Amino acid sequence: MTRVLVIDDEPQIVRALVINLKAREYEVDAAHDGATALQLAAARHPDVVVLDLGLPDMDGVEVIRGLRGWTRVPILVLSARHSSDEKVEALDAGADDYVTKPFGMDELLARLRAAVRRAEPTGGGEDEVLVETDGFTVDLAAKKVRRHGKDVRLTPTEWHLLEVLVRNAGRLVSQKQLLQEVWGPSYGTETNYLRVYMAQLRRKLEADPSHPEHFVTEPGMGYRFER
Amino acid sequence: MTRVLVIDDEPQIVRALVINLKAREYEVDAAHDGATALQLAAARHPDVVVLDLGLPDMDGVEVIRGLRGWTRVPILVLSARHSSDEKVEALDAGADDYVTKPFGMDELLARLRAAVRRAEPTGGGEDEVLVETDGFTVDLAAKKVRRHGKDVRLTPTEWHLLEVLVRNAGRLVSQKQLLQEVWGPSYGTETNYLRVYMAQLRRKLEADPSHPEHFVTEPGMGYRFER
DNA sequence: GCCGTCTTTGACGCAACCCTGACGCCGGGC
DNA sequence: GCCCGGCGTCAGGGTTGCGTCAAAGACGGC
Image 1 (tube, rainbow over the protein chains, first blue to last red):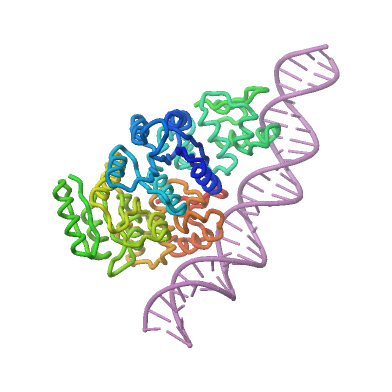
Image 2 (cartoon, each protein chain N blue to C red):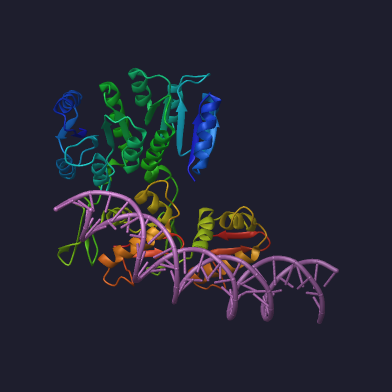
């Protein structure tokens, strides 16, 4: 889910944005001043930032610089100022786009999509996408598993389970966490699901499924993926 | 030196842009219609494109789609149309920015800098324009598929779908992503479209359409193009 | 206005997947 | 030595998702 950080001190604008964004399945954080915004950005790592230049505590351009010091997250500036100089200053400070108020919600959302789209390939790419073990290789980006030079077919649930385990490689993942991440928040006690699907993963990926080396059971607690 | 491709049929606008850009040490190519523009883009690989939507020979949005089929070069749209729909359409087709005429030269240049700046780091990665398999060849720039020495006729939708898959060669593309890229952001659940069009692509390109080798279904998740 | 092409929509059969329950195994506690 | 909880395994049935075909609707060219 795409995470948006909205920074604006006018409550009605924030409300309108939040409603529209949430309706389109964005995850939304909101800040009403620059200091909070910078904190939130650092804590939540949004995929895109919508920033009103007229903030109570600091100049909007300073917020842009503050963000650009450590992240390339797309910044979409909102402003009541139509002057060319303002736009140039904000854009050269590192903003990606500049929309003047009053703005059309459709247009703003389209510009938001454009900003997110173009950041996609490199955007989240800090993570390791290739995970190798002695027996098989997991490519998280391509959603592919190779073993003995051949692709292994996984069902959606199998893949989802594998993904959670691999992303937490070396760490213990509790049964509850696995159930909630794969089957949804309302699950948590159906440990039989886990038994069945862990067995399938092991059958497809372990050299000796009855003596697993990579998908380790921690009795009473959860499972652990070891590379 | 940064290379700019200017596409506009109004000589005075082209002239103004060329003068201003050259004065700032950009290298400038110019085209006055869509067909020439697509040719020039393929031949010269500009770092950024400035595109007027009102062209004599084809719809500006078609030019955007034509470019997006094989390159992620930033596209800055110029247009006299202020309507929100126009903007949304252009942006969703793959434009990076949309400036309405009359525009301030300073602002345009600032937006150009922003577009170039954000494309920089990925700029090194050369786009692959020719993708070959054992059964057919896809030329993303020329929008052509050859099979057994003959061109294959594809409908616009078939093309678009093929483009998205080929650009993500080897990677799994989710059904939602395919639907949104080909049919627009408001689609996401109409998986029957995918079923119909995947079948058509396979019928036209696979040796044995009922046992596809290159257009692979990952049940419940999406599709994958393998070369 | 007519015709051909492309897109959208619906229906149907079939295969694959997900859930479920039963059973056996193993280890620890009493 | 027996009991019991947790885990692994297996097989069956309901359901979902995919491929296919056909026909209706939308669009553009002549």
